[in-house]
Amino acid sequence: AIAREAKGFGLGEARYYIVVGWSAIIWQGFFLGAIGVIFYSSSLLSGILISVLLPATEVLAVIFYHEKFQAEKGVSLFLSLWGFISYFFGEIKASRKEKMKLKNTTDVGDDQISEAQLAHHTPAHVP
Image 1 (tube, one colour):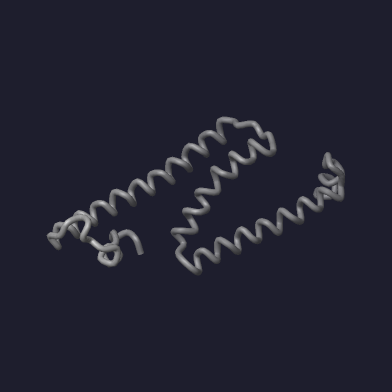
Image 2 (cartoon, helix red, strand yellow; image 1 turned 90 degrees about the vertical axis):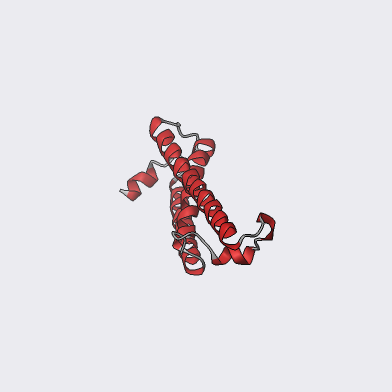
């Protein structure tokens, strides 16, 4: 099936194999990078980066490959952006809540809470 597809490729058979080879190399780099992010930081950060790349990939495919922006792409883009924004909104709310809790327990002003104190009092859902 690959040989048949290569013969029908618009830019020629040799370029087809070049595109397939480079695509495999780029995907291997992507997965190696995702594993590196997990190893050096967390799987949460890796998931965030992947969720950012999904809508970027869709938009870039429409721009560079002149793909049609159909309803499926729109729904996918909307849901991924909604999830991404919801996650950060939840993190901001949890951070503010924790900051207020820390402020109330220490009876100090907002400007007197140091970053070190906040680092020790992270929200419960963050590892």
